[in-house]
Structure formats: C-alpha cells, structure tokens
Length: 213
Image 1 (spheres, one colour):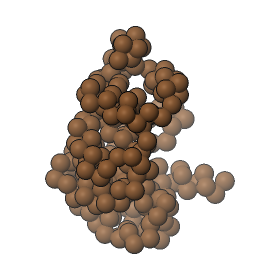
Image 2 (cartoon, rainbow, N blue to C red):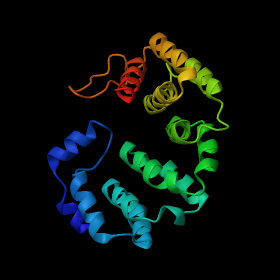
Image 3 (cartoon, helix red, strand yellow):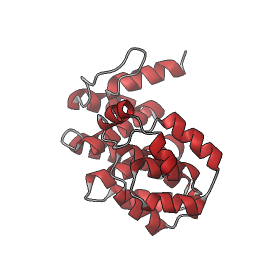
C-alpha cells in the first residue's frame, strides 16, 4: 500500500475521475508492479479487502482466477463500483473462472444495472467465442426494447453486444445495423482520430470492412 501511494499522480487521478475511477496510479506502473510480484493469491485477497481502487486493480493482476468460489466472485462484483475495477474483474478473472457461465446468467437478470452490465459483458464474450445455444434474435429483441433508456454502463454493455452480433453473425447483421440506426445510441459519442466510433452501425461496418481487406 505504501508503494502504491508513491505511484499516485494528481494528473492521472484527474483523468481517471472523468471515467468514474477514483485512483491516480498510472496503469503501466501498476502492471510493472504486478509483474514483479507475480501470482500471489493470498496477497490479492488482502489487497482486495482494503477497498482501495488501485489496490484492487493490483489484486486482479496478481490473483489466481480459478481459485475464487462462485459466491466470492459475486460479492466482489457487487463491491466493485469503480468502472475499471469491474472491467478488469470481468475480463481478467471471471472469464477465466469455471463459474463464468453460471455468473453470466445470474448477473444478466440482476435488477442492479451495474451488475447486469457485467452479465451483458460475459454474454458478448459468448456471442464472439461460443455462440452455440445463445438466442441471438432474443438478445436483439431485448436490446431493441431496452437499450435506449438503459443506464450508462448497462447501455454501453448492451451496445457492445449489439455490435458483436452484427460483426460476428452475418445472418443478423442487417437487423443489428437497423436497431443501431433507429435507437441512435452513442451516435454522437466523441471519437479520437484513428479510433472506431462506438455507434453500432459504424462499428459493425468498419470491423466487417477490415475483415475483408
């Protein structure tokens, strides 16, 4: 914790705050520290218990994903209110856990939109890598009826799922683009030069174009 405190930077904290993350540690320096520490499951648990955002991010880099129980991961997600902590928890830990599918189904249906957004993130992973048994038309139905008015983080996760359905599944591409155009979610999102817009119709078209060039 003392070493993490020395990595704090006011400018980094200011930038992170704009994204809802309450820490000022440069992520490159955090990863370098994690590389030095290597995998330490018990230390990871202790760091998580501090409640400090930078410490939790470090914990997620040095933990052993398959060592967590299902209920432990569920509790961690509900505690992980900082967007970056939730993102790393889902992508670096839960996706590698034997409990990922059970948690996907539970979180997807959760009334808390932040928890539900994690369920949608795991669903997007399935859309891309293991679409078998997924009801893609059903997912598009839910996105069509709920995405426009969903809270920000849930809306973002639904939009990502919409884009991946359109990118990965040609049979559903036209409908995915049509839904994106009608709902116009993230249409005016500021996008840096050289980056792809998160507006689904543009995102889908650009990724499909790249795949065929």
